[in-house]
Amino acid sequence: MEQLHDLNPKPLSVKQYLVVSSMLFGLFFGAGNLIFPIHLGQLAGATGVSQRLVFWSLRWFCHYCQF
Image 1 (cartoon, rainbow, N blue to C red):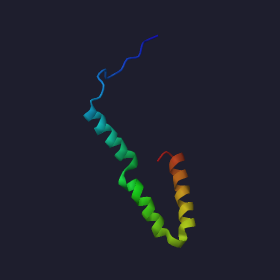
Image 2: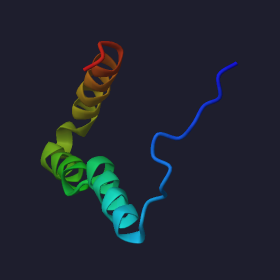
Image 3: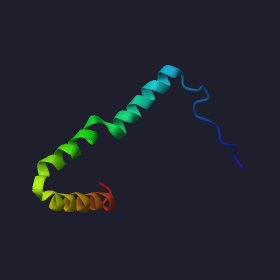
Image 4: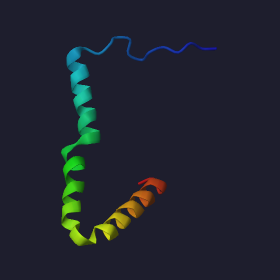
């Protein structure tokens, strides 16, 4: 059986580690992902129930259709 080896034998420096971690944070938890849904909820007002149904159905559709 062939042994596996690391493609990058040098570990990341502290600076590289911070850059990569900040990029991953921005990718998954960017300001748009935190602020925009709250803003949409405030705009929904009395129609919040129907808005939630549309949101969950679109989320389900995008998940299963690989969007």
